[in-house]
Length: 252
Image (cartoon, rainbow, N blue to C red; front, side):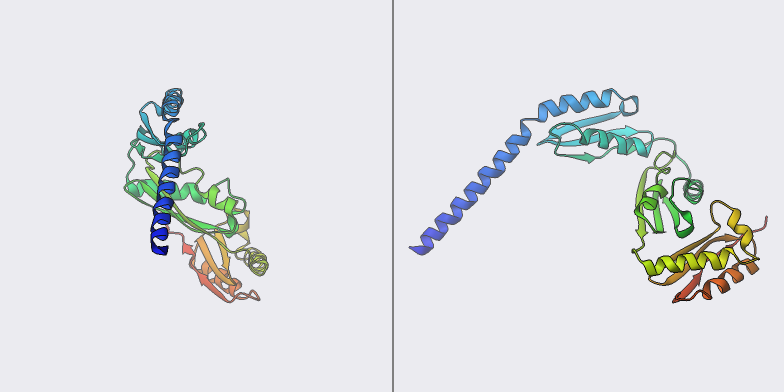
């Protein structure tokens, strides 16, 4: 008898769950027509979305079609997400604008990142990018999350960029690391040999610190400058290790 009650209870629970799911689906589904009309109008109002189409199913909007820039793909999804009763957006838009060779695009992207004017403090960040079939992968380490966003802020609008994969790591918050950053900056940029680099606004010598371990990135004029930077970095009290990844400028 007890087993019969258990079976009956199980079927009742499944039935109630099915009813609830159906109710949710029907609730979302009843707005599909109005959502379709709204998002179609929103897309038509912007010339950059003239080749974008939208379909709606259970409140989920699927965007397809083509745009010229990757930023336009992001903007389309952002705009539609704000529409009333939209439950989510599937962004299947293809970026088919100007084609730029991967090597050329990588050089342009890395230059924009390195001379990025939006970052809070580039001195303690180092970010680099690679490109494959127009897809830009950005990697590196930054001190603050705002620097992570700033590093890719200008990439999305660059012709030739089809997609952006952001693999930038944010260094853990640490007062100990902050003290090392300050000490490393003084040791390197106050050295008579290296002081001339301090007047360059983009900081040719980047100082990345994580859990007491220091890594130097950037480009210096000659091998002696690289060696001096490594020596000064190793003299800072509290630094567990120093990895000197400075590159020497190639003479044309």
